[in-house]
Image (tube, rainbow over all chains, first blue to last red; front, side, top):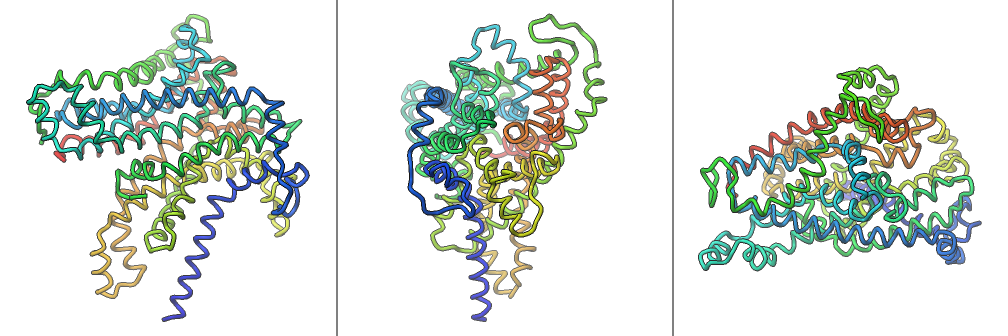
Length: 277
Length: 298
């Protein structure tokens, strides 16, 4: 019996080790290689001890100054999309939580059904329109696109969170003569802050990392950081892995720290509050 | 049944409309109306900047007789099937492992969720390095074990494997967390009963865990089918559909058609075919959601 239990424990430890390796080794590889001298990046077997250097980051700054503008663009687009998506989702989530009718259910269904369309299909008709409106290569286009593609999920999430707020609270305020907008702002929003945070975390991770829309709708002025990394990767002949790892690190580190920090809200959002992170 | 304000009415209550405005405005303007326009576009021949002319179903005929379309469709199906099912298996295994009680579970959970934060681009950088033909540690390790290397940039099948691998790595956290949450939601009494009956671990899994997890497994599977089906970035960043268009998936085929070959009409036909397949995949999910939205009173 005891031997069996020991075997189970060893098996579990092995499984955990494998899972950790699978999840973390690629990430650690990026972060560590960015600080390795070029010669050590390719050392076989991979060298664990080396003299760390910031040379690749300096090279990144001098050779790819545009990348840092790309980071700024990413930040602007992420902030705008998050604000828009959270506001629109909270408003719609409130309506779906407090008004129930077949027509409401139908319109919620529409919101989700539309989300089934593959994004690449939408780029076909949007591309000429965006050009015609002279919105090509602007932050605005990406903000609208990113917010739109999260508003369906955001609305469903907010509905779940707002459902947990007792109706009596807003009905009492309604009797006191408060408008529905005032109720949303003063009663609902403070009590559903956790849901709004969960929605925000999703949009932030998505907008910061998104590739397809940025690839099609931006070229220079609003070009985001992931596009610069892809471009560096594309210039493969004169490929400097060190600089590439440095760029990937700079793109990755802020969002990774953010996810670690906001993990509780991410998990709450993904599971409707079933797991407390 | 419906309760509260607006109940009993079959139309949207006017008080709700201003709140629905922003969300529905965005979705209508950016997704729904353009999607309808794609239908029109798919019935015309047009290149960017020129007025379209009506050609009927010629674009559909063109796509359906193009061998590259069929190859892209086949590649998409192969990758989707691999990605979704491997993810479900791994995710399920991990969920059971986590639920069986692990020390430091909070930190393990944080580690396992980490790939969720990684962009497709950064993940492509590391996969390209790890699997590089000359210097990649994984290929060197394979060689040291006397195994053939993964020549993903040369051999189409290997290309699809690395694309699937990258996709699984990026999306496993999502699949895992859905299944893990569902597993934690199973009341412990069920397991106490199973233990009193002296049921073996395997029987407990077969008759308690698996049936109770089934709804969550189906939800995760459906979500992943729909999202894996749109696969673009992983392919574009690893192989660009090459060599010789052999690893193209539908989204890449559509992109090349529209933005490389300027054939918006036939790209729209491909797009509409993709939409139909997506809607078919999602129909079951929507059906379940509709019942939930209309019947529950929370």
